[in-house]
Length: 141
Image 1 (cartoon, rainbow, N blue to C red):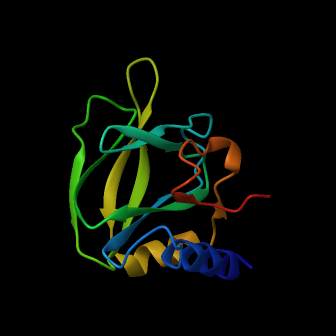
Image 2: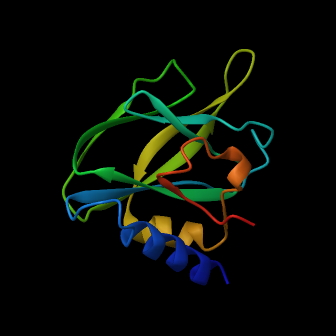
């Protein structure tokens, strides 16, 4: 079932009429873990908040090809710069790190094969966590 949902989300994102062929896709996912399960860190692309990533969820984001900075709400870590070519699909895993008073999330690049295996166990992001509803693909249940 998750494969069908993932395929639907990616097809919906990749076939959207609002984007030219010079677009790329960022896929964000967060494996389900007990540590930090109460946290829902924000994800920013080029300084704009696009969503908050809940435990055990994933979503994809269509962007124009080129350089972008992705970061989370954990400000102690610098943003990650990604350089995307047209048609690229880049996977970014959210890892929860402990902090002094509270933890936060950090985004790390993940190999496509590893990400696809991990995402089989995950659910699409609930729409209540999506800030940029025009560009984020999610299951709107």
